[in-house]
Structure formats: C-alpha cells, structure tokens
Length: 97
Figure 1 (cartoon, helix red, strand yellow):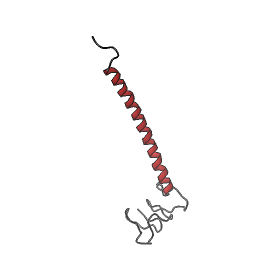
Figure 2 (cartoon, rainbow, N blue to C red):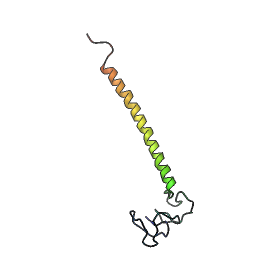
Figure 3 (cartoon, one colour):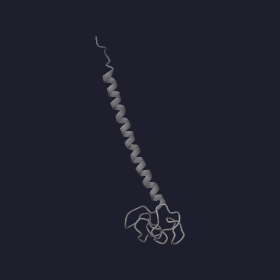
Figure 4 (tube, rainbow, N blue to C red):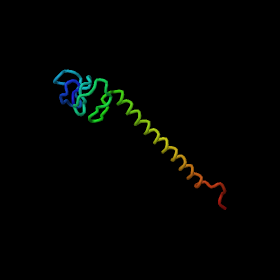
C-alpha cells in the first residue's frame, strides 16, 4: 500500500506515514494500490481500477450485499417448494388400505 499524500510505501496496518506524517489514506494525490497520480475528485484509479473514494467502496459493498440477498431469497424459495413437495409425497391424501 502507498501513502496517498507522498506516495511512500506503507504497511496495510499503518495509521501514519513515516515519510510525511499524515494518515496513509487521508489525502488524494496518489493511488494507494499502484502509486499513480490521481485527480483530487477521482473516485476510481484510472491506472489500476481500484476505488479510491470511500463513497465508492460503500456503494460497491452494498451492491455485493444486494446480489447476495437476492440469491438467498431464491434459495429459500426453492427450498420451500422442494420441502412442500416432499411433504405432499410423504403424506398422501388417501390412506392405504
């Protein structure tokens, strides 16, 4: 990971860059993933494509969560249909004599 203020390489766990003294993701001059220059208002790095704005990261996480929820709903529906079908087979409407 690179400091977004000075471009110096820092640890993923760093809370402060040892070269410039700012938090590594506080500024917007460099991409934290590939160290390329970024525009101050950029949401995505044009060189490597990672989201460099916190709003984009939140939106991406919400999108992934919505896709997961729709899959969960489909699995639940299919399980309900399947188990309902098994119950009908297991309990016939006419008793055997």
